[in-house]
Length: 471
Image (cartoon, rainbow, N blue to C red; front, side, top):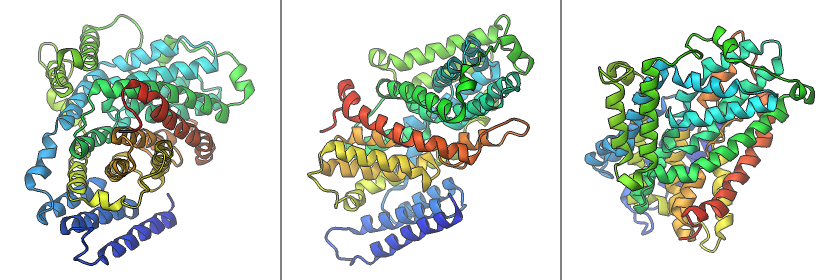
């Protein structure tokens, strides 16, 4: 976002705050706690949009302000750090550190990519490999860091075909962002959504339920995005020429082993990861919470006898700033719901709006929100409480509305600074990569495509999987 746009957006939020504070203190429609919550909420949003202050610092300040003013208790603020979703993410990062340490992910990705014989096969096999990483590595930035060495090795092998390298450079972050919706641990925003739903309406979405709803969307949107990248970056002659990528060629440009016999630690890590994923997916059968399964996996992954990484090294990879941000924004969501502020904000939403139209508006706002709030977690913390409150007034299932908003937020490709994976792959010294113009060209196709796809899933597919459109 340009400085002018950021300033304009910040000014709009500031004007809204002034209008809010102008409401008479005795207004029956807005209580004291709700007024304070809305003021803190608007100031935090203004700071997220218009300043360069760290997002986590702003969120902690907002949570502290709500606690000091008595809107929420200190137990509520600090209790969010003990939420099971936070523990799930911590343990998932420990497991991811074990996977990264062994180089297992690179070996699996190369195994798939080396089977490509055409450019289209290369794009779709790469897409499939990236979708699978959503089960092994939490958060999009972690997956981007894990996939970067694989891309650089592929770029070296295809050094004579520049447009193919640019296509892959754009494909990697695009698929990483869109496929995050496959799993609950795919993005911190998902955990915020789950927490807000639980606090607001008492609905708990587990790992299995999220997988059932999100994986089909992730697969379809990722492969459609692969086609969009192919058509907007490459030419027909580029796609017609054969391509041959072997594991040995990639090995010459890779530091970690991608060929040869598996080491014992790779076998143990693969078995552990497969066991954890199976237990996550079979939660309805054994009733062991996903966070407990993740903790068992993390303990085994860091154990002296069976582990592949030391616990203190694995804990260094945990994004503690993200966890604090999540905890603080969860507290903000509780304040919005409990104080009545969220209901007051969406009181003007027509109650007779058709549910498909309501969901279309939710998806449109979620798709465009990255132009204002660059943090995916911040977008969920701002939008999801409002979407849930508005859905209740419009007779729409709040679970469907919250999921649609969160899934739509997966599109954040318009600018290099719109998401960390896009930023990471946009600046690679010595390697051809995409330009802002390439991103805009792709976004013109991908934004409406993904928005329509999310909407179709919300109104046609998810109801078949147990999430109806209406309550």
